[in-house]
View: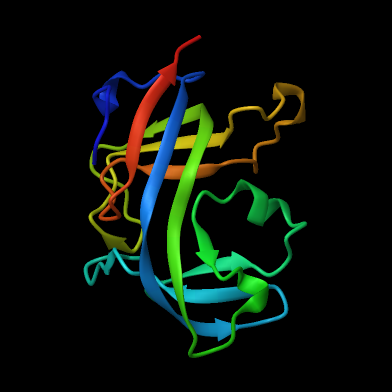
Length: 156
């Protein structure tokens, strides 16, 4: 992971530029609400108490807050995917703001490897503070197997 600032130095309020080059994923399941894609990076943690299936679900509606808050995007979009399709999964270059930081010792049991020590909760950089609820945001796992690039843009 390429960072201008060591991850232990990130602070709530920091604005970051994040991106992840796309990797190929396969659509495993499609429902009215989600398209589930086999995740191209993390591996299932066989020692975990959580039984992760190796997939990530993407909202089927472009109007869904779940879709608009998600850093990772599919190409084509989830609403154009069918079971068995290949798609690209990545993070287009995006400006985000840190609204919370989770630090875990021991690393958090999330169902996949590597287990995260530090997770940043982020929202789009221009997202208004007064609109925030506890369910808003997406997480950036600083120990992720995905090749996420994070650069500090500004600090308040």
